[in-house]
Length: 96
Image 1 (cartoon, rainbow, N blue to C red):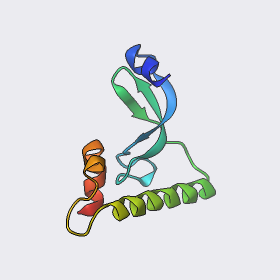
Image 2: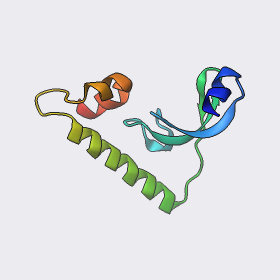
Image 3: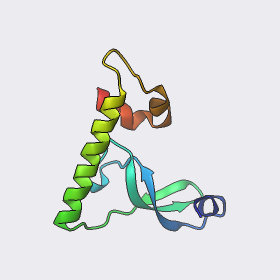
Image 4: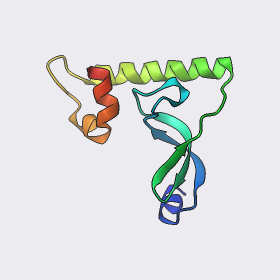
């Protein structure tokens, strides 16, 4: 379905992992959020109003992702080159 949305420009709403730019108060890690997926890839991140409980769970997920990434990075440099290459802007913000 994802390939179909991109290749045929169908603008489908789906949950995908991306690095939000402030949506959901998140901009440091890649995380699953609802988006419109179309010919240009992610056309738009859909920011839903979350309940207090859902927002708390989302924030806990962000922290867990940050902790996991930090555990992959060696103290004397980047121990996770593949991770850096796949999503450099999100990962670099964690190690700076």
